[in-house]
Length: 182
Image: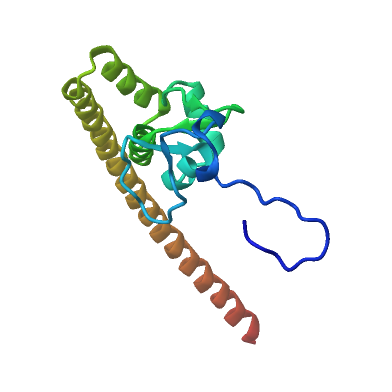
């Protein structure tokens, strides 16, 4: 224990985790340190829900929701009910985030999870993912064509409005000129 310079009764400092005996709840699994970088996710590292959420770039509420709808495996719990996730959960959250950024719905992501869980085959899951990516790409092609057509319509209508505006300005100018002449 460290000596303090305060006056008054001595208050014992909180025990550090490494000072606790294993029987008192100290696990052999190393808890993930708070990291600002994007560490690799070794399977032996345990992430409390807050650290997992922070590293994955999501909220703790999102982690709980993904666990509830079974996109993430149910976390182990320490005494006191604290959720602890492994490195696989971090990789899965990153994968879910990437798919969401690509426009995938949670239902599509759940389907990929089901394919993988049913067959335990990465190759089959990737084949299904490839088909989904192809459909998303085709959908984007359609949307791009529609947006380009919309852009052309807007440009044509804007030209029409400008022509009409110039015509109205000329008419207004003529009327003003007539009103000033005797």
